[in-house]
Length: 263
Image (cartoon, rainbow, N blue to C red):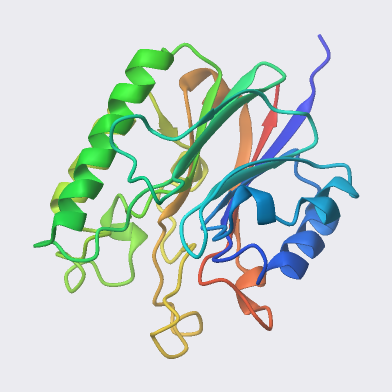
């Protein structure tokens, strides 16, 4: 039986207009079938779709001005596009877009960051992840060919942050946030990066702009993920983090995570 390859990536671009040249260059070099973007920071009407369409990528987006926003760039036209997480999405933020591509379903999320553990924003983050678990329960089953990708704003394990003791109460590593993410994982997801790199340390996708030389000093976080249901996890041949774009002249504070499949 013949197989086909599938290459999926996720990237928090921290403004698609500011990172347009970087994303275009990466697409031309890497040629993914699907790229999930977060923090596009642009309305749908102002999304710079034309340069991607000129390179044979379809665009589906769900954005707001100045912050938030998610999008798909895909070789195949997305089907059954869903925008937003009903009942919990704040009205001025675009945090979820879902679609199907040639039999594979993909959910792309920008999970709320939470600001501080004692704030209502952190409670909203926990509620959002709980609502996402319900969303998966209502619309899919673990037997689906389903990918969940994006900026989850949670580092799941001690190995996923540069200093787990000092960062223990940070909103992106807080026990409550990790428990909420684990509840979603238990629905039926496999962390594809850890599937292929179970014990590999200092593998990060985010380095804070505010920390001097964070990349060079290894002061990072693995908060950007591609997870899959068991069927697709079994078909995944590799999942890696491409650090090079974080070294660009005008980088995002995140970088690309890439998964490859033989279907």
